[in-house]
Amino acid sequence: MISERASGEPNARRREATDLYATVLEVVKRYHGAARITRVSYGAGMPVDRLRLLMDRLLALGLLQSEDVDGRPVFDITPRGQEFLDTYWKMRGFVEGLEGAPDRRAGGRR
Image 1: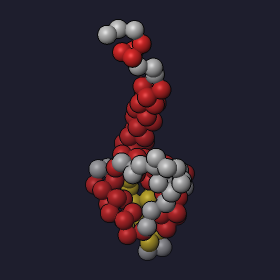
Image 2 (image 1 turned 90 degrees about the vertical axis):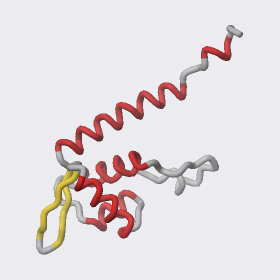
Image 3 (image 1 turned 180 degrees about the vertical axis):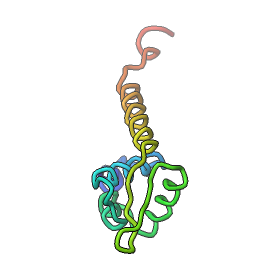
């Protein structure tokens, strides 16, 4: 996923916390339990120091799990993390549908 700010769009907005959580979880999911912090950093478009704080939060919330492999942590998404992603994408679909729907008030009634 590309940062909306980095995409060069004139109306680009800051990513919300939920957007960042979803981005990181999607990147971690892509590596099937073998996601190292640098891979996630590149995939999410975030510096490692900022990502560490976010991943600590995801670990505390039970959305990620970590284990040491060769003395370094690797991350995997938990079932609760997958549930978060499913709900996130469903809500994004609703919001995008609402943003694209015509405003009924603008039409005929006054």
